[in-house]
Image (tube, rainbow, N blue to C red; front, side):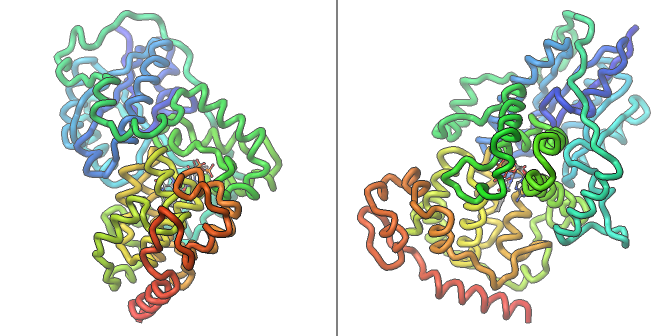
Length: 477
Ligand SMILES: Cc1cc2nc3c(=O)[nH]c(=O)nc-3n(C[C@H](O)[C@H](O)[C@H](O)COP(=O)(O)OP(=O)(O)OC[C@H]3O[C@@H](n4cnc5c(N)ncnc54)[C@H](O)[C@@H]3O)c2cc1C
């Protein structure tokens, strides 16, 4: 009887550089199964929107085919909620006679609690092997002298770079194909009812908002790698100069693949290092480290995962509940061209340029004085690349309530941001057809000039900025 290894896939929907999959498949004489639990009820509680859900299903379909070529069957079971996972896992382990279970560790609280419950239930039956795979370095390894998590990005980045100089990253290739088998799990187990059948038509029907978007981001692993290679070869060296201009494709656009784990963060780091010199890769590498940083914050300071800001000043702030203002922001009707163009980009593509994420988040929290958690949720519901730690960290940064946040008196001015980062307004015109015929100089005068077929600004930027600064001053005492 062959030994049976189970790979429990979660946020790592790929075959390349997947630590758990690679190690599970090393023993030539063992049979390997992969398993994924669909948890739509839990996802809803976590605000995962239909865009990202559709992307996960697309990634699973793709992965199932790739794993089939390796003779590794992928079982996709409908668990509904994390609370159902231990029971279903027990059934899988028993029916497949699993010896060893391999998985890549997750960072957020509910996920860790789910894993603990599975482990406690099955530890006498199965041997577990877990790996750090979601971050460049496991969060518990990058700590201050006092053994605490870092609160300042630059210190964290220095510590990461120094760690990587001593312990270079290891990448794992796709596993070799296992011996051919015609095994069909659902033919002989009693779990057929729990099988989650990915049916594209029903996703289209159910997830119709996705299909108002032009297309799902690329999810085929081979094509994602080509995209990464292309970026490293032709755009990485100009990244520092180009990344802030939304009209230019100056960034990698790999965030959606990274968010669902169709691309390895370690692969990105290694390829960037190999492609250009240290100076040219530095800015992009720092962005990869920002991703690690926000995961480290979520791991070391778990109150941020429970709806609280890192900085207690947040508790002293009384946010506005002006639903009209919030609705106008969500519907790209603020009367501020760069904000409305950015929100339109998000709604039509499920992605928004980083510079714009900062501008719209600052505007929502500082000028409209709307709770950052409202914006955080709206992003979660629309982004293909929704990632709790990065989204939460990004919103807290912009609202000046996070670890390494923007100082409260530094409020982005959307008018000057627009002038600086979309000077000829080509980005604005791409997303706001009503302004297409307007000369750029008129669009930049949106505060004083009435633009035909376009709303006037909903608030006075200067006055609301001052109000926000005063409110922070008072909250800080
Ligand atoms: C308010 C706000 C919300 C955000 N929400 C998310 C989110 O839900 N998911 C998400 O992946 N990113 C989020 N970001 C970070 C950033 O905007 C996106 O990662 C980036 O725009 C993705 O585009 P790209 O792949 O072309 O990035 P690139 O510029 O090519 O960067 C490469 C990768 O580095 C990571 N990265 C880049 N910038 C950051 C950053 N500031 N923080 C953390 N990681 C970063 C991403 O994984 C990205 O794919 C948010 C930023 C802000 C200000």
